[in-house]
Amino acid sequence: MNLNFDVRKADGYSSNSQIARVLTENWVKENSFCPNCGHFHLSEFENNRPVADFFCKNCSEEYELKSKGGNRLGEKIMDGAYSTMIERINSANNPSFFFLNYNRNNWSVNNFLMIPKHYFVPEIIIKRKPLAVTARRAGWVGCNIDLSKIPESGRIFIVKDSKEIPKNKVEIKLQSTSFLRSQKLDSRGWIMDIMNCIDKIQGDNFTLEQMYAFENKLRVKYPENNHIKDKIRQQLQYLRDKGLLEFTSRGNYKKIKIL
Ligand SMILES: [Zn+2]
Image (cartoon, rainbow, N blue to C red; front, side, top):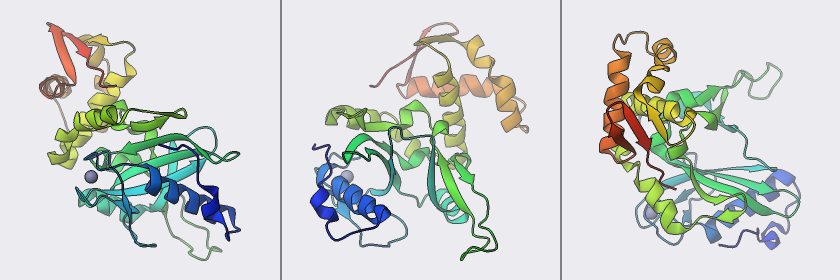
């Protein structure tokens, strides 16, 4: 994988946003593989297709690319119309995402990661303020994707801090949560909440008591549910069955690190 953009591709473009778009799209096309099946390269959809930017000819997985210059990827990524995004998530018609964070000075890749589509739940989509009445599209409401709400297991780095992650590790990490694809939206929401709680606990080992400490927080989110503790235990068991946790002894758990 060549981490430098092919700057010749920007010949003839003058606006910075166009140059960035041409260079980032070209980089993905020339360098990325399909994390879903390992196929060695991705194909581009024709321009202005509203749903996705790339697809895999081998497994049909679709990807939308979001790029951002600067040293850090940041937590909020701007996306299109809020209502369209929510609709797509609810109908399971959303692509997986690539986030590309590049160095503006030398046009090279700092971070490149995939967020699998099964990690998209409505709460990671944040409404932006409607455009002002003076704007051309007055009243239009866009959205941001809040990456801070994606559990660690859903951030599949392909390049991290300018270093390439071995392809087989990328694929193994993605496969470790592929069971989420067949889950309904609300069950995925619960699993992600529990994963996020586990991520907040430092170290590899934790206890059931530490998990119960999140009970109040979860109750705010699920006021109808009177059995939050039961739900926590059930989800931990589920994650154990799926190979993401180990039960070391009664009430004691160990995180299984995939990468
Ligand atoms: Zn594929």
